[in-house]
Image (cartoon, rainbow, N blue to C red; front, side, top):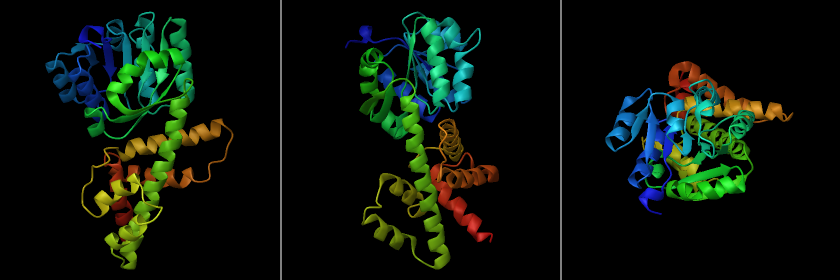
Length: 299
């Protein structure tokens, strides 16, 4: 595919992950429109590389064939999508919207229905891995939507991701991601407590890790937490406690909507909420071990 064949992309949400994705797409020659973000550095860097800065989501939508969002909450997605200067009111017929964030499935279904009325379509495509992987085009992408939209977006997904999955119809990607993040953050909290309890018991953290990691408990998530707990590297997993807490809340709401009792998520949500209310929201998830350790020390 030559540069002239690449679709014009509008990108909303230049945080840690979004700015890395924008840099990757620009390096491959995609025409790019971006919108102001609370951290101006990423927007200014994108503009320096040739992006156009739009003044509103509507202006961005009018300039784009594919609108991408990578924002923090479903409320933020809806704020950019609805309203007279939102994406939906201004989108060009035949355009595609892709939500790369972790959103509430029911919200995704509502947005897709509104876009269909406008003659455009939507996919949810939540992500796995880190901003460093995004820079190198090595993300995991859990895309959901029609087969036609997936085939249209697949070349772009493959420029961003190493492992690209088409997991089902619209909103299934967000459902899968919430289940994935529930499992991941429950592992984080359990392992953080394990390291903190080892400290109290006088057991060396490295000894604990070496024994646990030699068997079936070993995982990538274990190594992210170990990186901080033992090696002092806090940001190997660049995912904030505030975002983790939000995702667990979304998972809990989804369970309620499905009429199912969630046995495990209340404990994970409680410890994440305690960390958040104690001022740890902007800290990275691997620092949960520090929060639990500090909480134990106060007892």
